[in-house]
Amino acid sequence: MLPQNFTRLFLLWFVCMLTPIHVFSQVTGEQGSPGTKEITLEELLKAAGESNPEIKSAAQAAAASKAMIPAAGALPDPSVKFETMGHLIPPTLMKGDPSSARTYGVEQEIPFPGKRGLKENIASVEAESQQWNHDLVHLKVMSELKQAFFDLYLVHKSIDVLFKNKELLQNFEEIAESRYKVGQTTQQDVLKAQVEMSKVLDRLLVQGQKKRIAEAKINSLLDRPAETAVGKPAEIKKAELAYSLEELTQLAQSNSPALRVSQSEISRREQGVELAVKEFYPDFAAGFTYFERDENPGMYGLMVSAKLPLYFWRKQGPELDAARLNLSSARSMRASTSSTVRYQVKEAYTVATTSEKLANLYVSAIVPQSNLALNSAIANYQVGKIDVLLLIDATMTLLEYQLKYYESVVEFHKALAQLEPLVGVDLIK
Image (cartoon, rainbow, N blue to C red; front, side):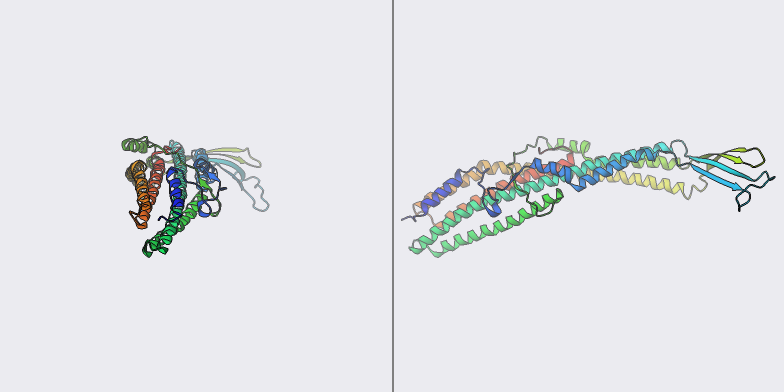
């Protein structure tokens, strides 16, 4: 004779199986209360754009570099001077002495033609580099936020699945105990159900830890206290990877902010070499002076001077060598960055395509087959053909594949998020 609570078990299993794999009911405590606010990825991205300190810092650095462009190409500040030649105390002129005078003068340094333009160009390229760096920081922060959101989504889905299976295992344990009491099964069945229940509770504790970590990561990116409530992630709409590996690689070569920062550095170093060559040419200075004399007519003076790079082998020469080495270093760094970006694109693309295939396999074949296997196990158990151990094994197998499905979905979306800073394109909207 079947246990009286078998009907309750069957109904519970039937409800679980009718619930689509994409939708699991809310639960309490670690599962999230019915009143838990649902948060969307779009809301988090908007909040991060407004409050993330790293994005703000990069934006301010870009604005500061842009503001420095006019200053880099400006003339050096002129010098003004006043001088008196005569009595010191009191400061009066000496009558009858034509060399006694008060002088007023102004002097302006004039760099060799082309130097100011190069300095302004270098500042302009530096500002462009800072702007690309701001774009890179923005994309990286958004990528990290998306990955944290998907981690939190996986945690909530895992908790939902685990609680569903926890309820089934509780019923299996009750059935095993009732059958053990009437001598229809052994104590091993009861112990097996209890062990599997403990494993589920253990995994729930781990998921609770992962939940707190994911929430702390999100709060960190939003510049909020770590304990701030985040909410339950809304259902995600599966993104599509609309590009091939070759297309993604081409996008990275043309759009990657990291590569553009490296290219800007090369441009800056190239103009630095040109400026170092210009340093071999003299800078000039021009001045005007007025001599105020007591009993003699005032005099005027004009001055032109040149600063000769006389010790070029100790100053300008080494500076030019250093500028050329810096240019070579920037080109090597550009090649290294390009190689790294290509590798990272290939890695993320491989993870994305593999995870997508696995998710499709789980949802279209493995999970439905596991459902059928559990259905068959329950039917066989109902007529006494199998014991509760096989029933528990079928349940835990379904549990594992349900969790693997969600893991694959999340890994797919996290891989797309990792691609975004590399290719400079939003792949998840």
